[in-house]
Image 1: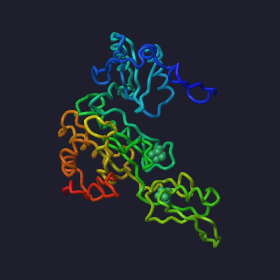
Image 2: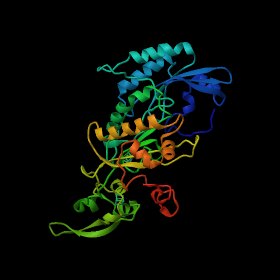
Image 3: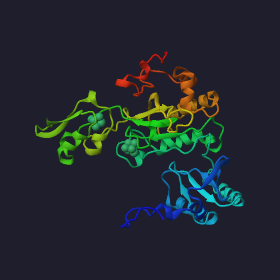
Length: 371
Ligand code: SF4
Ligand code: SF4
């Protein structure tokens, strides 16, 4: 029994209490695993025990009735155990092969009113798995785009590759709705990033009443904010702040501290696409994603320009990469210049900059770059 020695009951229960028995019995003693078909894995223990996992797509915001249905499936097939992955996939695990088909059939029989699968099986291996993403307009205060909407539109576009494993390697898509990047988009094969393009608007009338001015000043990573006195239209002098706009990188940290400094703006807000990052050190080192589309407007509710661009990148990668080659490895092998023509994306001087070079020299300034 693990480590913690807790003296309070605050927080979730110890996760070790939730292991299915076959996993508890074989923990740390696994022999190997393989993907039997898209969405179905087997893990084999040194003891010979087997665990079959059926992975299905989930969503980040679930209704209680949907969660109840997931629990019903887990009760019926998996002795009440179920697992959510960090990408919001749901994993149903059974301890023998003969339990897999009944589970799959049950999952396939559950449909939404429109006829689509409630529990699509997939998300493994050389394909697309669920998109890790952030809060979006539904919950956070600084988003420049929506998370659930952009992710739904993107997954609808890439859904075939969720159910199949026909890509050269795995393709990880992430989404963050502002450059605070709760969605960890900086190391993804394809990254969707919400981006503000205008500095905060200042509501001098209320700023000193609702904000701690020193906190707002201290929140700015580029030191763009300083305290200042302002005169309102009625002649009253108030304490407020001043923003040096040319220093602003539109991060929204000030708005986190001060509701009188909002950034959201219909024209200014939109999406940046990045590509070529990865966390894995398999075959090549981990890489940061690079900006490949500098700005796309918010086109609710389906973001067609964004999904078109993503589809072009995935198609070009699928057609051009070698087996096991991740998107960034492919782009580096053919040259980023060719990446843009293969993906039918425009190249501008805003793109593929990175900061790995010393003294902030960008990759574009190196002799490797041939445009
Ligand atoms: Fe909020 Fe930004 Fe995180 Fe999105 S990425 S949830 S806007 S802090
Ligand atoms: Fe500073 Fe970010 Fe606010 Fe701009 S948006 S003023 S960079 S804290």
